[in-house]
Image 1 (cartoon, helix red, strand yellow):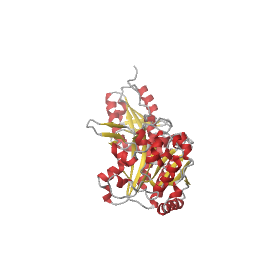
Image 2: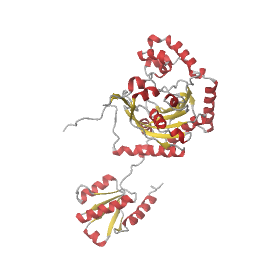
Image 3: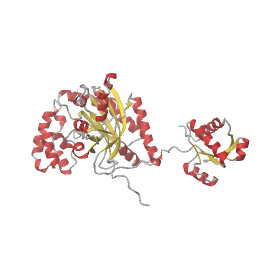
Image 4: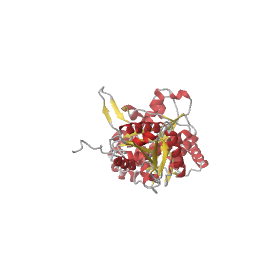
Length: 435
């Protein structure tokens, strides 16, 4: 029978045999965030469209070309979130979290949606790990979130990443830079794509981020923001570099980084991989000191980053393979029940093992002994145990170590879980699996 439909182009399924890799990444990120004093925030998958138009910027590719926007049954314009920061700012302001004391440190795991040409590392539904810091003006905050991202990469064993940083100034010094950009790009106006011709008048910095090969080539000769920084922005950037040096974090100043969203100010940065082709940015972020005020809140300097989980996983998979050797959780004990009474007993014993935070399974399909043992092997069960009439009468069964083939007797009464837990602990210690 033919399938009714298949997954939409630009989306992908994470299958049970693959999901543990996501768990490993997310567990590391949660631990690193906890160590840095960050707490999780969760926001809706869709918001009012104006939230992203105002925050992301109407001249960006995201707003102009990529957002999934629709009208709901109440006639309201709704957009699936294309990034995580705007929703986090909205939630922070709506619930008055800034009254709890500053700085606010938050992190999230979120799905995002952009209508782009699908390719390796770029999907229409993708997932981000992000952090946001509200109310921290000091350059040390910039260095801290960069350090947090690096700690995640180090804990996961990511290799070959390079950190690139830049400053794109503030509203005080950016007008002079915009003027210089307009003068430069005006001489190439006829060569620019239609979108960039519009940007030339509205926001010439966006031309620097255009994906068109022609516009990208023209942008190579454009003036750089570092030459137009005001004293405050220059001092801030110099201090960020000093803090990174104090943490022994290597970096390269790349004056071409502008990031793809309008809300950025001052520090911007990217962690770049050479292993995943054109979509080489694994993590990107920076400051957005004016965003909170622009969205109706107090004047509150803020910053953060977004890390693409699909791109990170792709990077890990293309390296030495050690990450792919991380073992998925397997069944600790499979209990075979022969006959109705034994099956009921197995069902109860499995419950007790699970209550003790170990993984246990029993038959749910009415299989034969041979079929159940075959299934236990597919599950990768560490131990198996057969229950039948004789075992129930004697109160003793034989449990088998599936790795060594060794068998030994074990009491199956009320003390069963304690007996099994002791045996399991010995097995883990002997195999070095408790490291």
